Length: 215
Length: 215
DNA sequence: GCACTGTGTGCACAGGCGTACTCTGGCTGC
DNA sequence: GCAGCCAGAGTACGCCTGTGCACACAGTGC
Image (cartoon, rainbow over all chains, first blue to last red; front, side):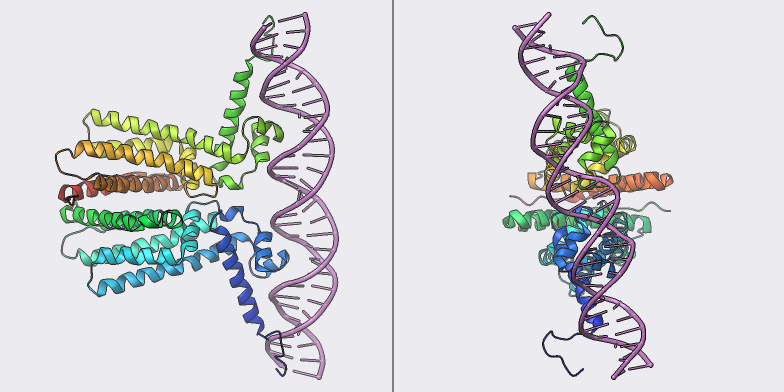
C-alpha cells in the first residue's frame, strides 16, 4: 500500500477486467470485416498484448468470447429500445422517431452491428443461438407494444406476433443497408431511412385493414 | 479410339467438368454447417479425391470457388421465380402459390439456401457481392411484376421498389425460419408458411391504402 | 503416329495454429 | 509480514495450412 510509485498500481481484479475488456474490444475490431470463425485465438491475444496461453485465463475458447461479445454488442440495441420508448412517450411521430434512433445507434456502433449481422447466421453455433435469443426477446417486446396500441381492435396474439416479426425483419434489413452505405455512400443514408419509414407506414396501413380470424 | 476397354474412357473436358462439379458439391456439403471462410482448400480437395495442388487447375482460390457456388445455388432460386410466375398465369392464389413454391425449393435444396443465408453477410467479400447482385436482380424483377399489377393506380417507381424490397426481405426471413425448423421441428413448417402468407397479405392490404406522393 | 497439352501426383517448405507444461512476480487475505 | 494465489510469460509440441516445383501419362490435333 505504501508504494504506488510508477506502474500505476491497480487491484488484481481491475487488471483482469481491463485485459478482458481489451480482448473483447480487439475481437470486435477484428470482426468488423471478417467472420468470427476466421479469427484465431493467437491473433486476438497478439492484438491485446498478451501471450496466447494467457487467453485461457479469461475464456475457454474463442467461441466463449464470442458469446460474451454478443452481450456487449446487444447493449446499444437495448439502449435503442429504451430510447425509442422514451420517444414514444414524448408523443412525437413514433415511426420517424424509431427509425431515427435506429440510425443513430447504427452510426455510433457500426462494429457491433456488423458483428451481429455477420454472426447471426455465421459459423459459430453458440454465438448464433445467443443472437437468436436476444432477437426473440426484441420481437416479443414489440409484440407487447403492439398489443397495447391495438387494444380494442380484436387482434389475436398470433397476428400481433406476425406483424412484430415483419417489423423487426424490416428494421434489421435497414440496419444492413445502413451499414453498407455508411461505409461508401454516406449521401444516401437519408434515402434509406425514408425507405424504412415508408415500409413501416405501409405495414401500419395494412394493420388498419386487417381483421384477425376469430380463433 | 479402338480401346475403350475398362476405365470408361471420357474426353478430357468431361473429366475436368466432373472434377469441377465434385469440388462444388463437396464444398456445398461442407458449407452446410460452417462458414466458407473456415473451410480449407486442402479439405475440399481431400473430400473431392484430388491432391491439394490439383485444386488450382480449377480455381485460383477458395474465394473463386465460392463465387461459382453462388451461381450454382442461385439456380434453384431462379427456377423458383419461373415457377411462381407460371403459377400466377394459372390464376390461382398468387401469395399462397408463391409461398408454397418457396417452401418446396427450400425443402429440396436446403444446403444451397444455408450457403446463401450464411454467406450473404459472411466473411468472403467476393461471395457477398455476388449474392447481393443476385438478390438485387430478384427484387427488381418483383418490382416489374408489381408495376404490372398496380398499373393505373399511380404508384411511383420508388414506392414499388420499397414494397418489393419489403416482400423480398420477408421471404428471406421465412427461408431462414424454414431452414431452422426443417432440421428440428418439421411439425411447425405449416405454421411458418401461414405466417409468411399473412405477412404478404398484410403488405398487400397496406398497398390498397397507399397513395404515392406526387413526385 | 507423334508431338503437345493439361489434369492430376508427390514431395517439400515455411509458417500459423491450439494447447500443455513450467515458471515468475506482484497483489491479497490472514 | 508472510504464505498463497493467479495473470501472464516462455517454451515446446504436433498438426494443418497454402503453395512452389518437377514429374507422369492419358486424351487431342495434326
